[in-house]
Length: 185
Image (cartoon, rainbow, N blue to C red; front, side):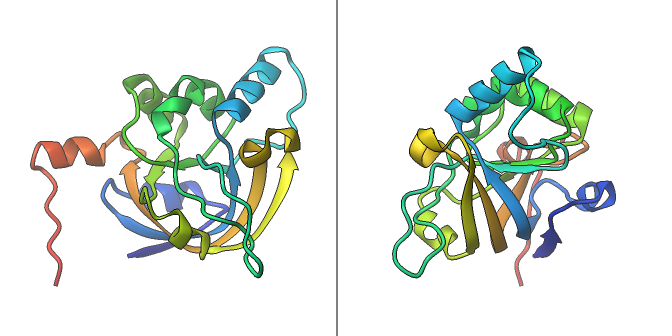
């Protein structure tokens, strides 16, 4: 298990390989479909974004309200393919990593490889457990979107698997082809 912290250096990201298990700590931003569309429209219109994409990690989630004593409610991953059409424009703006579930399109993987973006998977169905890794959460943009508003999260030891690394390897593809074998002791 590798421990990594945001902000990433390019060297940090180069060390990650498809299939690596990681514990992520640092700042992560939430964004789903509606936010991605708004951001893409703002970029196309030449408008200033409410936050800088350079160096960011975006987690595809729409969390539930926090229970008393917690920073955030359940925050399970959303299917990443729904954001794929926005990947080229966000990657070109300096996005460093995304977190979701499921495979990415070829166009999204090409954009990620060309711009140095890593894709991590979080475990679907484990949103309540994942929320225990969130130490702080605050809405920073598009509050009117409710659960889909952009939140700035501080996470500690958030468990992930590297799906697409900087060299273009795809963990899902490797496992389908029988090329990935991890021995546990």
